[in-house]
Image: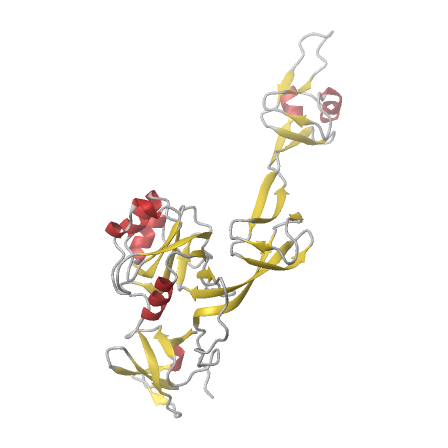
Length: 374
C-alpha cells in the first residue's frame, strides 16, 4: 500500500495525548502520580541562579589585589543591599578612608586576592512550570518534572507565534471562509481563544492584543501583516518566545486561505470549552507544529469514525496541496496511478489524482501533498 511522502497535519476529535513538563534545572516537583491537574496548576518549580555582577575593588580603592580581602566589610556568603557599604580601606592614621558601596543587590559570592575582584550574585530567578493541559499525572521524575495524560481533541496548525496559553474557545464569524477582521473582536473576549475562518488581518490581531485575548486562530495570514505585527522579518527559526501578549496560529498557511471546513466545524463544536494552545513552530532540525488542545470531559467509547491508518495514502483520504499551482487547496484522493507520470518539466514522478470541493480534478505529484490526519 502506498505511503505519503510528506507528513500530515493531525486534526482529530479524540486522541490520548501525553506531554512532559520539565524544569530547565533540578528543582521541586509539586505533584504526585495519579493527581488531577488543570492547565494553570503549577506542577514544578525551581530557582535559576541570579545574574553575576563583578566589582573591581582593587581599581576602585587603588589597592593591590591582595589587600582587598582585609578591607571587605562583607564576607563570602553574606547578603548585601543596594548602596550598602561593601568594603572600606584602612586609611592613613585612621583617616582618609575610602568606602565602596555596592551598586548591586544580592549575595557576595567570591572575593579574589589574585584579581582584586568581588563577585555579587543577584537574587535567584524563580521558574514555575504549569501543567499547560488539564489531565492526570501519569509519571513523575524527581527533581525534573512530570508527565500528564488526557483524552483530547487535537488540531495541528501550519505556523504560529507566541507561547503556551489557555482560555475559553470563542468562535467569530459564521463560515470557515469568512475573513477575520477587527470588527469581529470585542471587549468581552479577554482571556478567550478566538477562532476565525479565513485570513486574519493585522488590525484584528492588534485589537485582540488590546482586549487581552489569549490567542487568535484562523486559516491564514499575510506575510506583510506578520512582519508588521512582529516589527521584523521572520527567518528560519524557532518561534514561540515572542513577547506579544497573545498567541497567533494559522491552520492552513500564508495568504488568502480559508480554514479547512472540517477543522472549523470541529472547533465550533467545542465553543465554550477550555482549550490550551501553543504557537511554537520549528521547521528544521526536528519539526514542531503549533497546536490547539481541547481536553475532553469523557473519551468516546471507540474511535468508530477512524477509517484510515496513520500515514496511509489511499483513495478517499483528505489532503492539502503544498505546492503551486494549487497551493493551500484541500481535496480528496480520487485515484492513485501505479505508473510514474511525466510532469510538465519533463521529469517523471509518482502522482495522485485529487478532487477538490468544486469538482475539479488535478494530477499532483505525491511529494507535493500532505495528509490531513484524523
